[in-house]
Image 1 (cartoon, one colour):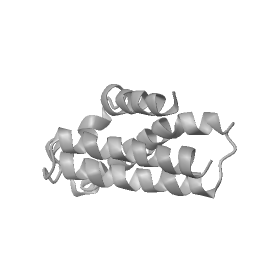
Image 2 (cartoon, rainbow, N blue to C red):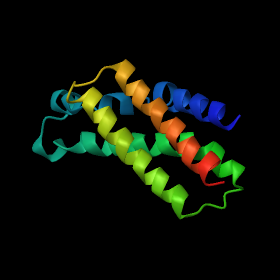
Image 3 (cartoon, rainbow, N blue to C red):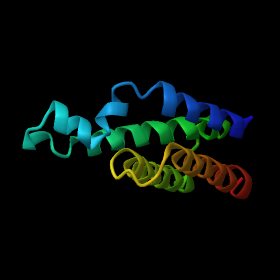
Image 4 (tube, rainbow, N blue to C red):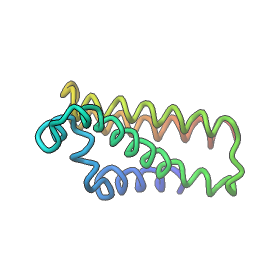
Length: 123
């Protein structure tokens, strides 16, 4: 149930909960809606916030499984997931170098690798 919960929460966060962030993480949205130099890099903050939210959601089942007794390995995996999600979404939303299928395959790989490391290998 852990990995199924991780996948379900991925779907919830990546498709249903983004709301305004789905636009705000696109640099072009800021150019069109807030073209002043002051907002030039605000899309990066939106990408970071979404990446943090996504990582928290997919790792929540592992947190619950461990009764919220989190160790260093958990925090390393969490941080790596934030960074990978940030880079992946930037390549899709801004650099236009990957499509939705590639984006989702990377996210599924993140989930599987996180599960293997924290639930199978380190338990």
